[in-house]
Amino acid sequence: MPLPFLVWAAVAATAGLGAVGHSVARDDQKEAERIAQRAKDTYESAKKSLETCMENMNQSLLSLGRSKKNVYDTSMTKFIRNYERIQNIPNKNFPGMDELRNFRITPEDMIQLRRMSSIYEGSLAAGAGAGAAAGLMALAANGSLTTVGGALMAGNIGTALTGIGSLAASPLAVVAAPVMFFTALSASFKADENKEKARLMLAEANEKAEKMKTNETLCRAIGERARMFENLLVRLDCMFFPCAEKLEDLVFRKTGYDFSRKIQGYELNDSEANLCFATASLAKAVMSVLNTPILTKDGTNVNPEADSTIRKLNNGFPALEDSFISVY
Image (cartoon, rainbow, N blue to C red):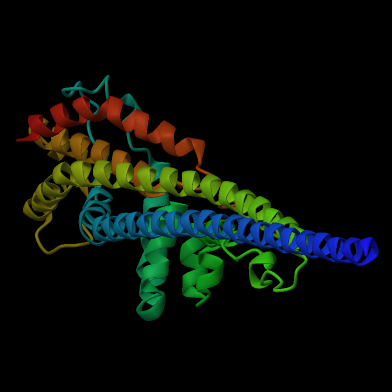
């Protein structure tokens, strides 16, 4: 009789071990699912944050591009058209002249401005329509119109966006979901394999999240520089535009409709010569905002020159304001 008892005892023990095994497997499966969900949440949160940051950056660049276009269309066009008709402006000791030594416009600056103006007139016009926003963003990010303009005039938006395009590609490159996310956890009892798979998913999600955070930091920095440049440009143009209009009135008073006539410096009184000096100083300051690229040439980082230009303009702003006030 003892033998059947031992057999049943062994069967019962085996059944008990099986139940425990299934329980452990279920617990492991649940843990695997929790880890996998954590991986997905980590990835999706970082992705959403990066996409929001990129959208804000793009809007800031687009806004700066529009502001640059407006200045080119109005103030800068007036300035170039009229200032080049004045020859040999007297070099007198006008208010703030020493403080504004870094904002004195040179003949080389005028050549560059005319060249920029010529490129601009054809470039953004050629990039109108579907590519208009892209062209404005390129103008904001790349600064100089030389490369952007040539590419847009050739109808090549992609080339025009070399800087901003590689920037966009960099954050987007890490947005693609990890391959592991497309592999469902196995429904079999190999729960330990599922746990390992889930851990790999979490490691990959964390790695991609870190990359996205790095790119988010870059996007924030670029958006911040774009807003700082636009703020400076708007403040400068509040002085530059009325000075450019006043300069246009001065030229018209002295030349009328004789557009070929040049004004000689000796024809200007002190007030008129001061107007020329103040307007040219503002033009040089505006030119530095228009020309300074926010991005490095490869489009993957903030250009150190952008911060240098911002500091220079902020330091020189009081003298520019004093020079403007002296005109009115």
